[in-house]
Length: 49
Image 1 (cartoon, rainbow, N blue to C red):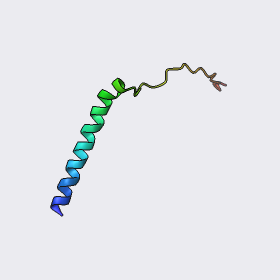
Image 2 (image 1 turned 45 degrees about the vertical axis):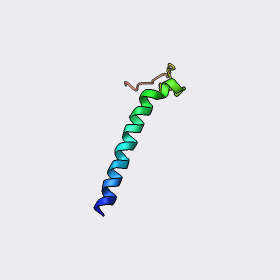
Image 3 (image 1 turned 60 degrees about the vertical axis):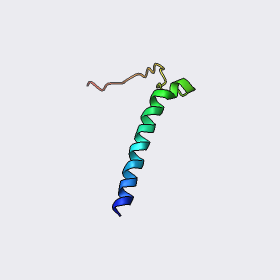
Image 4 (image 1 turned 120 degrees about the vertical axis):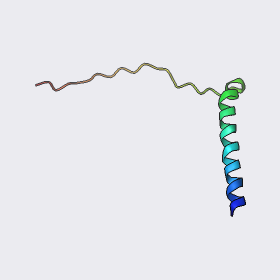
């Protein structure tokens, strides 16, 4: 049981390292992680009676 947990911890660590690596290297391969930058204007009605 301990060996299984150890392998799961290694797998989670490798997945985390892979995710961080993809975040750094992804834009070189065409992945765009930027949020869409569009301006949104909506009128706000305040009830100030």
